[in-house]
Length: 370
Ligand code: G3I
Image 1: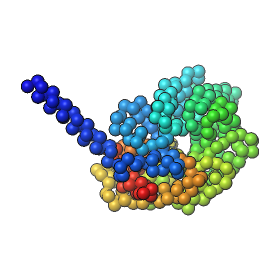
Image 2: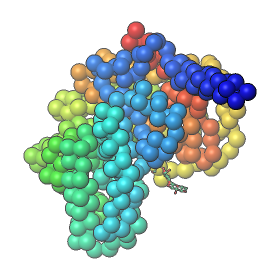
Image 3: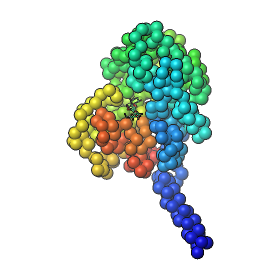
């Protein structure tokens, strides 16, 4: 009897394992994944949250290793988390991310050294310019030098511009003046000579903001300071992808000698009354803004598949200029767009659904590499 039970248990275990692995391996063509299909074109990345960095979600863990060749931390390398007190840094999760990248031969893009949002409380309280300058210097030098040659790249400065291309009002602009971006790159270059350095923003494919971004980049270059690339975040809206402006931007930024990356790609599937990704913007909750709480029609997912396929056609057309395409999350369930700008919505902006299954958009993007 005991022998029969153990044989039955073993058979059951194997069966469960097969069913489980069958779930993950339902990718389109045998063995080919996003990172394999595009390996000769550009890196395919994703944003990782804490659970994923700590590999606490087995389904996510398997999918990430299967599909992606680059990762960006969604939050854990931001100043608020990595530098919570004046003279205390919290490198635990960032060190885990670097170890994860090395173990799995996945490139890590650090996000982000200088950003007006998610600043630590002590920094927001600093009144005098000299102390703020000391915070600025210490933060960049300490964090960037720790990961010198250990991570592939940094978003040195994130979202320093307004929609009209002028400098965004921030503690950095107020305390340090509009040369703070160049100084941030100068400090990062000194602290991290083996790491690529990027400027990152949203809507910097739009003509006015692009002009402001080009002015900023030329200022850094004119100061003899290294900048290797520019990130266009790519938080776009279903049916409203600015393809013409995107192509103009790839050409314009590449003409400055820079690598071009799409760094936080997602396609918003729900209504909202403004473009962009300004985290400080909010919109009041209302059922009309959450139309797919119980599922989304295939026809809408097909529209998304067309938008993603046309985006990747453009990236492939300029694969000599585009070096990375990173999705802002692994699957729909993780996306920040479930909570912004309206809390508690059910959004579908990425290539994998809440069960980590590939969506029509995934097959459309893969079909380009058949
Ligand atoms: O960790 C705390 C948790 O302890 C607390 O219980 C919970 C409830 O308030 O908040 C958690 O912190 C949240 C954090 O994400 C981690 O989940 C913050 O409230 C929330 O504001 C933060 O949102 C992040 C947002 O940046 C903040 O600005 C999103 O996850 C992240 O996707 C988003 O990413 C930005 C890029 O960095 C820059 N470009 C735009 C992009 C989207 O806003």
